[in-house]
Length: 381
Image (cartoon, rainbow, N blue to C red; front, side, top):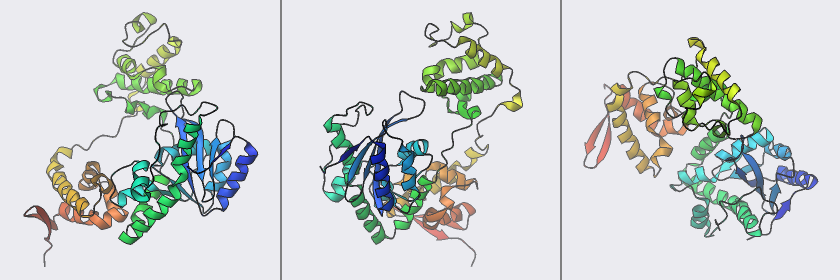
């Protein structure tokens, strides 16, 4: 394991950001917890250049300065960076302007694993120690074994990126990977509208009429309290009593006592809870935000969707791509219903989207030839 620096001083961190800004590329990873707080709690940022590995104590320094490096031409290399980008957006207010995700790149090389350890071993012949995955990263001081583990997550990313980029270049797929990485990088991370939070409730489809308004108000209230107290929303009020209160709104404390999984001995906001229930019960019908409806004719297109999925699966196999990378059932259904779909954009459109639209429009057909499907041009000559 290469040497690394532990940085818990703001001046040292600012100097490190200057180094990153001048590099052509740097590796980045984060260690955080999200189970005890409203927002994920960033504990450590791991950074590496060709010459140095640094572990940053984000409990001791202000990570906003990292935004300076993000706004340069330096390429930020991450592995499975979706959650890291979310954390960085919250911590710095921005995300890297240029990035490379080794997980996405590996998928386009035909690898189906998302494990950094397996990729580093498979491509570079190096075994990573993954024994500290469940450590408490907010402890100080961190044990040496945990520090070594954290450093290993970025120690080989730059070399792995170069290897994967070379493989992709050889296969003519580098542009595909770059397109997917940019889709991830530029994803909208705006917090959801409080009035739509109830859409995430399991069992929401069982709610009707007034119950929907109560669920909307309770979910928004729960989120507001959780944010103020910096705790996960479901620790304020779990989904089960929320749904129960939506279906049978309580009007007083006595009625609250009969709600399953609502322990009033530990619940300190009964007045606020009852007020939220009342607001929801009085909410005008037009003020209730309903989830997007599934198209009414979706059952009518099941056969066409199944046919398109068969062709999609074959094309994914021919290209040595995981089918979920090429397209999902939802992607195909949207295409069949002439709605926005990933399959009608970029490399997916070039590879298979145009063929699927031809099948859907009837200008092409499918024929079984042994164990394979063949695409037939049905356009008039």
